[in-house]
Amino acid sequence: MSIWITALPVLAVGLGAHYLRTAARKPELVYQANPENQALIAQVPRLTRRFWATPWLFNGHLQLLGLGLKKAFAPRLAYDRVDTLRMADGGTTALHWLGAELPAEVPTLVVLHTITGSPHSMRGFVRDLQRLTGWRVVFCERRGHGRLPLTSPRFNTMGDTADLREQLRVIGERYPRSPLYAAGISAGTGLLIRYLGEEGEATPLRGAFAYCPGYDIRVAFARSRAPYTRLMARKLVRQFVTPNREALAHLPSLAALEGAQSLDEFHRHLYECAGYPSQQAYLESCNPITVMETVSIPLLVLNAEDDPVCVVGNVRDHQHAMARMPRTVLAVTRRGSHCAYLAGFTARSWAHHLAAEFLRAVDRQARR
Image (tube, rainbow, N blue to C red; front, side):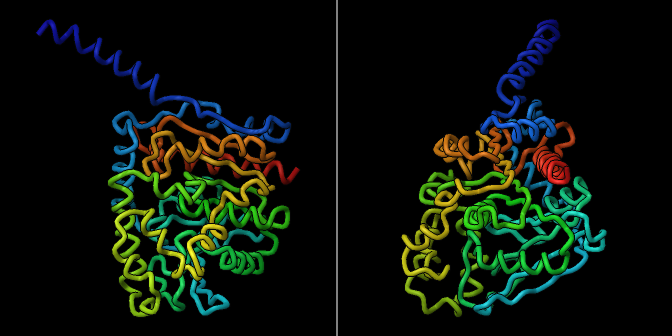
């Protein structure tokens, strides 16, 4: 018994030291050291303080398990209004609003969702951002997601910038006095960066947050780790292919798409469903890396070293390019996993607080 009395404090101290050394670290920041970025970072305390990952969720797999449990037991979210939009080719998208009745000049935050995201699955992100910013939030739902019918035989897991432009046009017409900001999460970051890169300084968005991007889709899907890559591929088949098989039956690639066992395999055969004549054409149009360096607005990018879906190698391949982007800040944390970032003893989302801090700081700068 006396041995345990001696050993337990030593073990506790050792575990605490290991946690501090490997988990509770300050973010690694990559950015161009210009006055604008330095002033912005000074207004975002979480960028220069330790991220205290929840101690019992100390690696990427446990963080994802915790995130799954939080999503499963989170209360439902009643959106204020839903606008269903018809795209030029007959496709259907939607806008889900929270805080719709806020004053006209209050900022509006555009949320671009995950690879299989829906208004329900993303409710925690939407609810937190609305509460933490006090802004109006609009969830931009893509073709075939959630309960949206696939009303034209075309969908793209990476989204469509033409559809996003139409959604932003409607948002701008509804709230013409409201400053616009955006937050993309996982696959939604690809759509966000492609749009920002294509638009350059012409975008109406004033600032953006990119949460766990995958970067170069030529290699990112192949690097996603088991078992997540297979689980996500089969979920994509169930979400998009199986319920729309009749509408997609004319496509030669359908059988290969149905049988995909990994994210990489699924996306090698997606090009026809996305409306492209070849995989090469799909990659040239949908890869955010091709236009990343023309992003002109303040942008915070967040990745974790222990992310098993968008792995840290993707980040390292492009961090030098990001350091050349004058208004971009890259933050890389030791822990956080894929879009989890559960922190403290209450397992709250550190990343949601970081996004709100950053976007509010950008808004303050813009109003000076």
